[in-house]
Length: 274
Ligand SMILES: [Zn+2]
Image 1: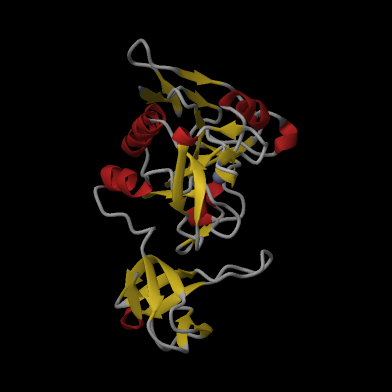
Image 2 (image 1 turned 120 degrees about the vertical axis):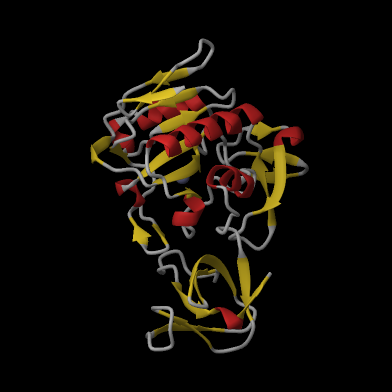
């Protein structure tokens, strides 16, 4: 596989790579991040049909089906509409500088009498179900597994993208839009995937607990910065980055859907790893 003029191409026979154009794209971007998604759909084909429909107002650069077949829909230097309202660390609006990869997967499943159903009511057998806790949720839930071929294709595409563009990080949609999105979720091996590609330990999944009451969340990494809010003992936060003994975190508080998510800086002495 190669990238030529911002499009994937085959280098050996047997590689399944195709390009299906979509009108759902605009302008030029310089890719800095890769965002992993799941389609939450019935199948790759129906997702591709949807993502080329102008009324969808959504798209992704690449779709990977369960057999590992790769379909590119947007050139890597063009803006696709996959991230929506998004924020991570000090960056926002990730469509402007990220590549979106969609993996065919129905997403979170509902368990009813030992049977598992997608939101569109299709039943999935137990052997493809992963029971795991999403890092932003408190309880275990059910997810459709990804296939090895799918993860492998995704890895190859990411590796090639990293060799071609100045990619800083690989994140989940649930990292950049934690209030709205749960993809790719706990069935995707994000920790391993990032460690292998970036050569460093994952830091998106590190959860810490606040060790006392009235802990200040501040606008910057020092006591001179204004307080955004105060947290109670045992409130959980997700680590994003550190600076001078302070952690920039996402506060894992159950808030109403229309409320803004809380991000800010906490003195790391007041946090303990969960
Ligand atoms: Zn997504």
